[in-house]
Image (cartoon, rainbow, N blue to C red; front, side, top):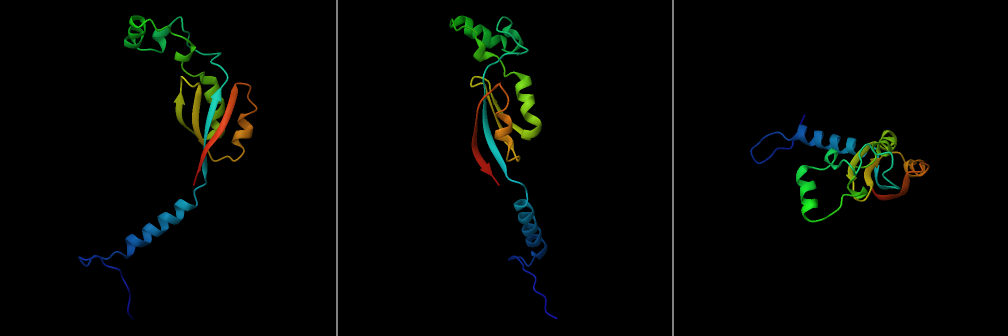
Length: 134
């Protein structure tokens, strides 16, 4: 009986490696698709930080730089409201990025009804699907 076993130029058997690669590719195709969403919030209310105490969320260097350049500390500088972010995370799946000055987050979700579900919250200003990833 003749068996075929692919070999590289050095005579090493490649059969197992090719099989592993094919199985890995097939399993990767079965992973559920995830969509990426850009979610903007309406405000930064109920925030744990306050612009009257910027040392809680800005570095001393950032505060000094703002003083020297006469740039006031305002609500754009506040971190995102944690309760808003946390309310969306369990069904979303994975937080990708926080955008503090945009008052928004980017997240991934395999739940096809995520956008409709997230719109029910009064603190969600808008939600946009950025892309679908397989």
